[in-house]
Image (cartoon, rainbow, N blue to C red; front, side, top):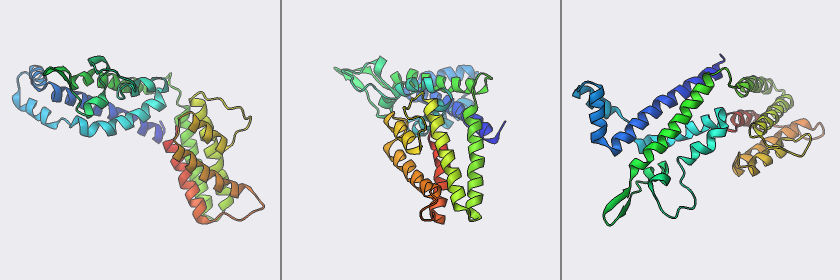
Length: 270
């Protein structure tokens, strides 16, 4: 197992553990008495252990956002078909005439939303528990998929290869071979963006699309943001300087930014 694959697997295992903790936390926050009673039953009435566990639970509203961001990125890479489901449990529908138990989402919980009618609570934060539980189950499914021989790890293996090429470009730049370093980075970016296009099953009419073409396609397909497209375009501009024999020489700073930017594209766009 490569170092990247091992790290990815470890990060996913950590997300599952943190997710289980968050699941306990939201249950405790919504139903403290019932949670303590159930936990006490499991621990044979050991009050000291019960107190230790409840005190160690994270604050759901404080820790959820970072967990969600990491988990979303993992689901997007390992189980892209489940990403819309994963997001739907967090984000409430754009059009919602009324708030009921079935359309109360995790985002509502973070905002402490509660609906009452004539003083009676119609729906409260406890409605977010099953929504988060489904998110956690999707992350656990991703972990099982990663451990399965059926999972296509070409993206991870390709990333390892690209990392090696980026390091080669960095070494060439250090030795003064600026154009060569820039050319390698251009190839890496183009191949990576084309791989991302394939991952999202996007078609492009142009037979041999370049970096700018691929970046525009990914942005119009909402895979990347406008800011990311512009960042990629700036890298492409530097690559073009390296590829044209008749023109000015690229500077060391430009190539340094291109090398670092290429590494950033590999790690943030997928």
